[in-house]
Structures are given as C-alpha cells and as structure tokens.
Length: 317
Image (cartoon, rainbow, N blue to C red; front, side, top):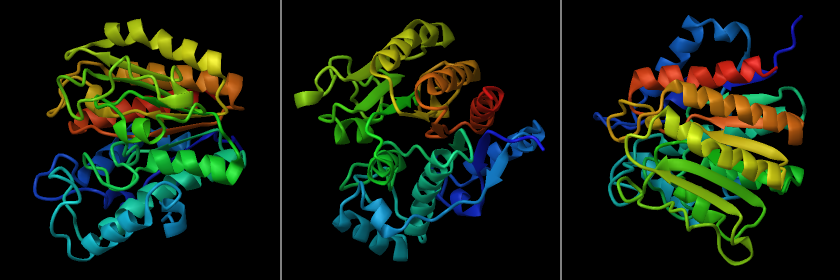
C-alpha cells in the first residue's frame, strides 16, 4: 500500500464558515475546491480528514478570553458586526470558526507525529484577526493559534509563516512583531492601494525582533514575473534562519481576476511557492509543512490555485 504524504481537510463543518447575503467570503468556497480535487483525481493520492473543533483553551492560546466570549454571544443570534463592518456575525459562527482553528491544530498533530509530512486546509489562513478583535472576514486567527500551539504543545520556536495572499497578513505580523523567533515573510499588494493598508518594506519587527521580518509589497497588477523576481528574497531569508516548521498562507485573491483585489499572479506562482517550500521543509524541518487556503473570491481561481498547491505538495513526496 502506498503511504500518502499529504492530507487535506474537507467537510461541512469547514464549509459552514462563510458569510451570507452575497458576502464575498461565502460558504461555496469550500465546495468549489473539493469538486476540483475530485475532478483532478487528487483525492486518490492524498488522505481526506474530517474537520476537528478546537476547544476554548486552544483558541485562548492566541485570543483573549473576553473576545472569545464576545464571539460566542454574537454567534447565538447572528446580528451585528464583530468589527467596523467587514465581519458580520452569523448564527453558528463560533462553532464554524472553532472548526477552522481545530482542523489546523489537528493537522499539526498529524504532521508532528509523522503520520503525514504535509497538510492543507482550504478554509483557514484567517490572517487578519487580532488577539482581541475580528478583522477582514476573519473571526479566529487560526494562523496565530497554530503558531502558539506549535510552541506550547511541541516546543517549536522558529516557525516560518509565509503569506502570498493579496492582503498583508497584519493579524499575524503585529501579533508577533516583537518576536524574533517568528519568521514572517509576506508578498502582498502594496498597502497604499489595498486593505489593510499595512506591510511596508520598512516594517521589519520591533524591539529584539528588528530585522527579523520580511514584508514585500508589490504594485497592483503584479504578475508571475514579479513574483519570480521577489521570491528569492524569501528563500534566502529562510535559509539564513533555518525554520523548524513551515506554514504557507496561499490566498487565491492574488490571482488575476479576483473581484476585490488588483493582482495578476497565476496558479503557477502558488504551485511554485508550495514546491519550493516543500523542498526547504525537507532541508530544515523534517518535511513539516502546513498550508492554509486564505483569501480568494473568484471561485475558478480558488479551485485552480489551491489544487495547484496540493498537487505540488503531493509531488514533493
């Protein structure tokens, strides 16, 4: 029997994380990815895992107890916004967001136990939420929870977080801005032209962490050639710092044709990032790599970009 090196998290509890009434982050995003995985036959080369719900204690590794309680309260009735207007509440929101976070930490458990070398969760990478507040469609920041979980549960300090979503991963960056052990590298549309308006090249960390973070803003309509021109900075950065675990937030909203961004990458950039990070994970991390879907609001782009990432992870062996 062939041993499969990659698992993917799919199931209705993840699909339930989506906003209603025409919101760009709708519940269909999970389903279009799942359909493309099956259409390409990728499901034959990987294991599909059911979503797992995070406990409150796990969520509290990153988020404040007051904020978690607020999410619980808003989740009961599904009225109002958790932030200034981007993140509306919905009935069952707490449970849905808990499944996003729990699936990511379950993936970490499976990777650390060597059941798999790599894992992908499509409804994950919710990189805007801060420790005390929601932001940009993100209720719980599963990326931040995953980083804290790796440290608390497994003693892994040097976690590399790589983000190629069109939007800057501000919730991760500012939460770990003064942490020299969190390796942060982010290619994103220039913050002067897109939400959240952050992630400038001179933002390299604070305090003991000055010089340990890598923000790479690129102009609107940047294409694969631009991606290839800046990507070596990330490889040099990782080789210099030798991470113990690699995380990739591979938002599909940096693909050309997304309705709320102005980028022009193709899925080839996402596949290349995944392939190269797998190679670096093999070199420094015993192969340990977790990928998270992130943003993306053009369904065709979601299907093509995320399956390209998964295919690259499978082929990396």
